[in-house]
Length: 405
Image (cartoon, rainbow, N blue to C red; front, side, top):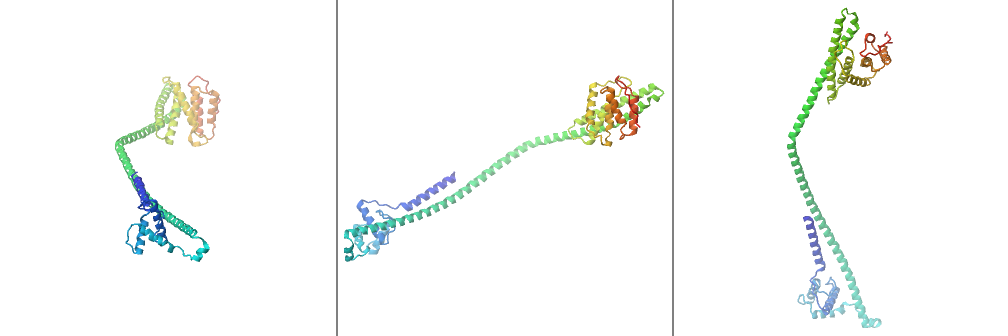
């Protein structure tokens, strides 16, 4: 605002000075007769080439200067005074200034009065031409003044713009300084909280890794043990009729089954804990979880000879549904993924728990034991187990199985 006020004041002063130079002469007001004399004086001195101002009857600085030049020319004391004697002297000089006309020419043209009128019109024409010249000079002077004002205003605008730009840069610097100061204060306050959050996050992540490792190892070890126990159980189950001591055989059978069942329970629990951890599971983790579900379902649906352990039907059904979802993710076109083990475990659970009709179970088992892509040894062992096994629930024993060849 200060810069713009300065610009307005400077502009006003320039305009006032220009107007004073152009339009503010030291005017001396006089009465009508004096004004006529001065008007006459200005006309004569203009014709003599001593006056170049307005012919307005006002004795301004230019008129006084012209009077001084005239007095100096005729040898009078050079003063500012315009006397009647001076006017009279000028009147006497008017005739020599006018164009000379002989009496013969004058008698042949106009009367003296008409001649004087024409001369007056002549003077008026010259006044008009002189006024045009003055107007032209005034216009040039005005244009020059306007250009000077524009230059001055441009200079002031540039100066004010620089001041404004400097002010903006200063304000921006102060603002940035305040922001940096506030940010540093906030950072100093937040850093301990940030460190604590990082520490907590790292501890949580570390804890997740530890849990993941612990559950992964536990699941893997128990899965291996329970898988070996399945093989032991199958050997006892197939050969128990050849044992001479049936009681000992039954006790050994139940013992292995109970151990394997407990191991599969612990492995299944570790697998579920591994599944709940937020860390991303590896393909190996997923494989162990799937097989832990398979082993657990096999043991809890295999009947004990001694009815001492009872599993809740809801738990059995839950694991059965989980394995059903798992088997759908396997591609049966691939030979080495052992999908048939899980397929047979589902059939085993359906057989012992009565989930499906016996004809549907028989069809599923027949498809497995007659699949040429599967091991002949595995197909024969599976066939023998279903032929010799008594189902857990009193449903019709499986029949119609065709021995694999």
